[in-house]
Image (cartoon, rainbow, N blue to C red):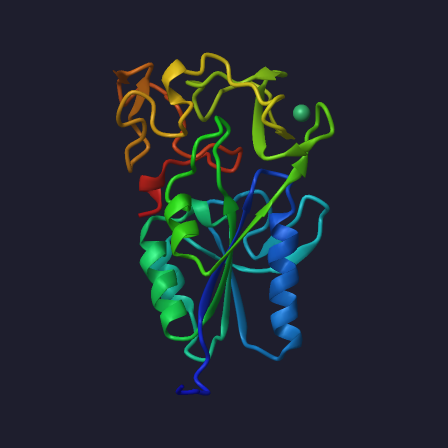
Length: 245
Ligand SMILES: [Zn+2]
């Protein structure tokens, strides 16, 4: 056996629905690393407009300093050579280049801790998150409490003007009141869910494209100009991903 003093890097993914405490857990792990006197840098996507560009904030209002970056390339450029721990909030907002970056960081000994949504509001896998969870060393899936029945919640319910969002509801609804809440599998409702999507895969072929500008409406391609099913599906995602690349 060959023991080395070289640090072993890792990727930890904290995932779950909205309101499941992902940000709290990210902050906890980052703070713990700081107590261990490790050099830490925390990043967030510049697309996350929930709060100021320099902080990440939990739903309870707890703040933590973070650097807002537009994409994976910019994030990489901002990592200092002696950084030992990299934290990323709302990782699903980044472009897919983040995957290879996180692998490279971990391979060179950096402890990577990321938080992100594992499912969109339809209960479908969120972008590259399944891949990220597969290549991670640790995956922590957190749960919220169902707003309807109080059971453990794994889904994010999207509500538009108080009623469950339609499967094909556009990302931005002008003049509509949008809200999100945590729900269990039983209470989670998506209006007009295509019948053939219960295996968690894509509906009727390519549901989403990288640009997020095209979509599939019950198997029919929708015009790119039409507002279609969002690629990302939280209130934070008011942009298509081609704006970040
Ligand atoms: Zn429920």
